[in-house]
View 1 (cartoon, rainbow, N blue to C red):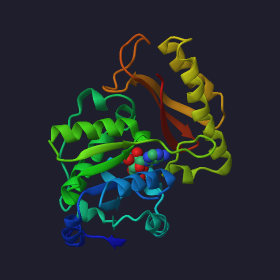
View 2 (view 1 turned 180 degrees about the vertical axis):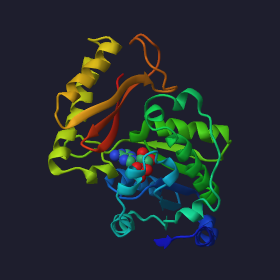
View 3 (view 1 turned 120 degrees about the vertical axis):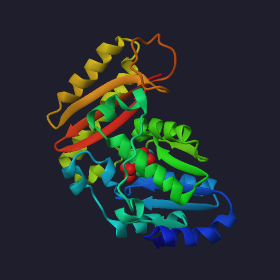
Length: 279
Ligand code: AMP
């Protein structure tokens, strides 16, 4: 495994490695945990060569304070990556990714107006900028993304279609702590007490899945919000039940297609997201 920090070094290393065959890519913002590592393991199983990027993309943070406090620990990340068998870790500075300010504006239509898009203005535009830039640099055959960031995955699928990029997007299952809390780099910012209470998010989502037939959609959305807000450590920003494909609000259980409940919750100052497929 080699660590490279510039686009030039990356391209030099990839020139020889590409000859081995298929190239898998896992973009991350570092502060790695078992969720990230499961993506890397899958990429290693399915490709001859694997690149992992570690880059905290300033363009996708709509809150300067969030960017400032985002956890970073390259040494610990490298220790976790070493045993996976990935070939290259690309950890660039911002000037490598954005030699010029990226002023591109993407339009994802209804995919970006709800949920994360609504509460984090500009976030998905920044995600699209960095992902398209990274794809341009790495030129992967397959790229691996977690279902934990469900709306992000929908945006990236759309981006790939819009730009006709020659890359297959591979969705990967959500990896959870033993207590059910979805793994996240942001969990590092929680106190032990907060982390224990944050498990109540998934506990409630699991109950909601079982209640899905017994309450109507709107009642269930309200029940989830009220139930989680009863926990003094938690404060729901949104919980929406949407169509799995187009992310439009579900009106009734009779609507066709798969349905997913997506949630954002503040645990103290830390914003956590999760989701659950409801049918
Ligand atoms: P991040 O470093 O938060 O940008 O995440 C990098 C990639 O890892 C994204 O595709 C995430 O969806 C994915 N990821 C983060 N947490 C998890 C998790 N708990 N389970 C599965 N994938 C995850």
